[in-house]
Image 1: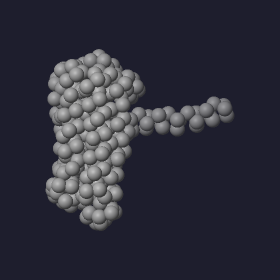
Image 2: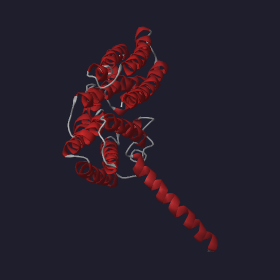
Image 3: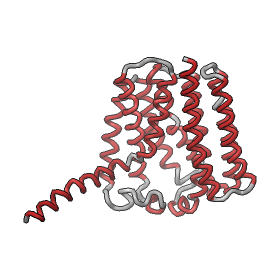
Length: 302
């Protein structure tokens, strides 16, 4: 009896932790780091001094809003997720969780996060959070199985976190806030194309439409190049409007040309899945380096 009781004491918390991990996984936590990084970047680059509780409310509210949108997405795509290697082990397609508690969890997160943004930041930031959930869940997610243009639609809510950080600090939308939005918007497109290329068969098995499936790999690679050119141009907007100095501008050119060169290499040489994975990795390095460069430039100019 003593041994049995001890085993039950050990297994109970392990089971509770496993359930908690499944609920956390619905929010796609690997994206949370990027969300917090860019939202915090938007607040800090505004140059506005805000109370610590505004920082906490904005970052927690933004992460919670994005997490709620991701959880709703997991519920809606639970069937297609069974056919993709990177998603088939999530709690819903794997059968570890029913849709009802997952849906309740997503709704609870949205119910908590949106008022937190409204009360702790301002009305504008709360409206942007609501727009992020609406566009991601009710527009982007249904379109994924219908048209490759869903990629551009999905990039809209994905680019909102730095703008939300900016509006939380300033209370309004300005040129620099829109520049941060534009950088993240155009960054996502070659990033998504890279994923669609090296996971092409999984997208097809899941019944999802992507640019490579709709128009072919070659067209997708050249689309990535076009978006990389646009990204390079948008990354220089902070310099053009006087919000960043030429040291940032020169480094932005170096980073952008390097990213573009990798895209061109694949387009000119019919890059395969190995190249697409490399482009994906380069995209992550690029975004981190660009925002850090912006931050250092701002600190030196302050």
